[in-house]
Length: 249
Image (cartoon, rainbow, N blue to C red):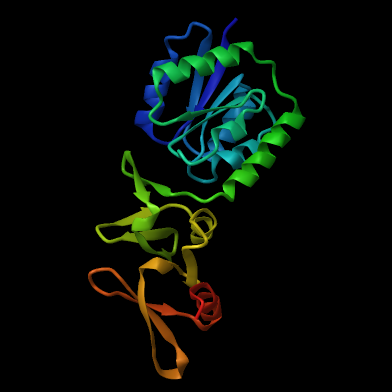
């Protein structure tokens, strides 16, 4: 008996590649591909697939939110470029975890496991979501940033600051600036808190890359960064005390 699958992936190349890889398995039939969180929920509940190959970073809302919203509960296989999550944390009944780019040998093991599984009960999905909430709070050492069809891994120590502007966040390094499609709050949660702190509602800085603090009229400060331009970033009064405490001033 064939198991049906829905792929949730916003990158066409990655989705097409996974579809092609799954075609070699006689016991799996790919029903469709969803490209964002909203479409993933809609197609999961409409098609009721046995398996959900679910990317975590997708538009509208992420893969974790998809699991919270679906009424139909399939087997879940996370597919993501993040290599910093503890893979064993997702070893719950029907859940598996594949890192991009997916290796054929690793996919073989996933399919073998899916064949032997029994459909999870609601309590197991709830257990999964509890683990997800815990893992979301963990920090990273490399930040995966999507650049066109490539995911660039930016070492945390290379990041000078992150600034929010409307929908996107700009991540600034010595060599390049990247657009990051998650919020500054999300970055604040996942970047190491012993190194990164807000100095303004729209700015998160790496304190190890602050050269000096300069005081101006009315007692305001700016943080002079260690980039080639010596960029001056305003420090708001609201966050200055937190910065002083962090720098042990």
